[in-house]
Length: 327
Image (cartoon, rainbow, N blue to C red; front, side, top):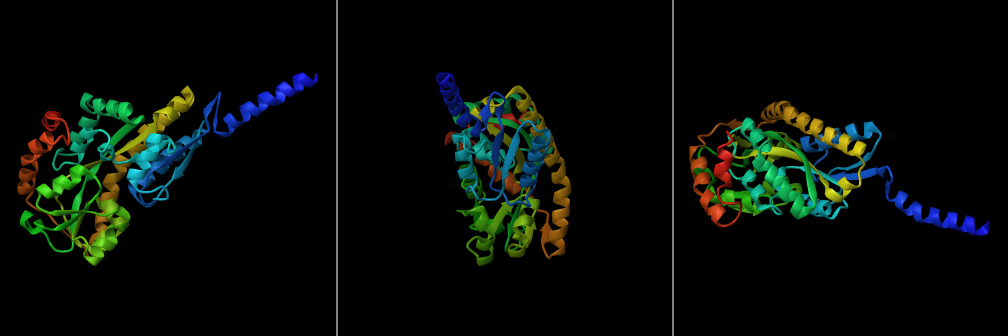
């Protein structure tokens, strides 16, 4: 009898640590989800939308982390690949450092409009890129959707491409961004997103590019009141999951995660239209000056550098041209 009791205690001791880690026969009970965007940003709202849908299902819990408590997006992505962050969400271009062909998405004027980019997301070309992400980073992209174009914000007015020559331009730590703004004639300066406003205010940089809702959250127009509709890069959204975390889910949990991803991404794409219009109106009311610009010179310089980018291995040869056929 004592032997049976001892074996029972031993078995319980072996099972409890597994259950404490959130894994058992029913799969994983809690998933860590993170990005590095401010809570007010549309990307963070998309993450909240996803988390709410999943948590309401009751089959798995999302522990959502917003802001930069885990570091910037480069650091979040590292944790995502390692597995301490189960689910990540942000812009697809953040896969560029790991799968070079994603760099083409942040190259100027690659996509003509939202429909063009969505066609790309739905294509076999993009499927091939997501397969590479899974193979190289152990991250499974659940889905992607389209945002609106990014604009230029400067301390001084910009009427032509001549006005940005040698401009100190804030860029993220992404090679394609640095090379794009070099090609356009600026002096790219890598500054953390959280430090961008102060850098504009103090003149460390004289310009920055961003989507309109994101720029309002950061109050860029208070330091750089000239908004130029360059529409140089079409933005997008993604939600992804570490593949080991995915394999630990049961079928019911996987279904909820996939459905929540589709719904949250579609919501963010639709919401971007509304939030962009509202954000731009607020900035104008607060003194921002919005101007159109002849983009021909920008497009010409951007396209002229495509072959150089491919020769340097920033993305695969012929990829940019292939994307143009998807219009």
